[in-house]
Length: 218
Image 1: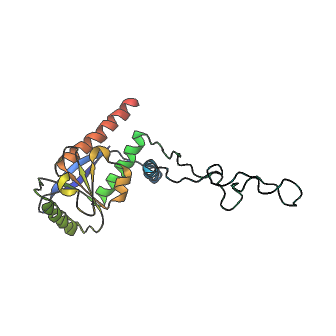
Image 2: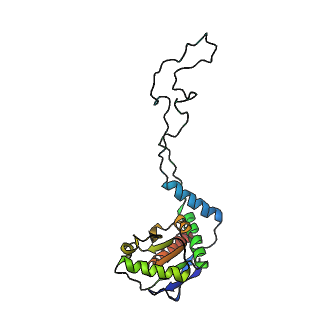
Image 3: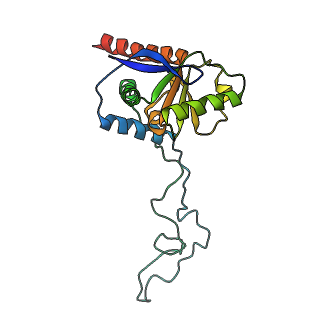
């Protein structure tokens, strides 16, 4: 575990200090790529489906007699060899694309991407920020965008019971996620990450629990 310093901003968008966040260290880019691939695979559902020769409509009669024509022998016209026939070994719509990544690997990949955001100064903790309407949330984020020169998507990390979500969910270029659902793919997709103070506490608790569990296993 290593201590990282995360910048704190207030409602005016001004940097007010730093908070520490302990994260696991040491991870390869291969693991991050694997974590993203597993996440995308698990979001995928089997929709494609092709008709077999049994499902294609048409007569089942033999197209020509077996012998005496000089041509190759065939059955009905629904065979995969013919245009308009069935498909051999095509998608069935029942494929399972699920993949697994154990908790330790997933947490390592998430921690590595979080630490990169901190090093690049693309992770801020907001202190004492409350909104009464969506317009206020939009105004605050505009200040942050101008201050930090953010051009792309912002990720907003919230604890499960945080009330800010209702004011943020309709804003464009903003993605909201609970701390318990934080994953490597979310961090790869966003350009900048914001978190409330409570979210930061939950985040540190999440990584410390995993670290203790790993130490006990050894």
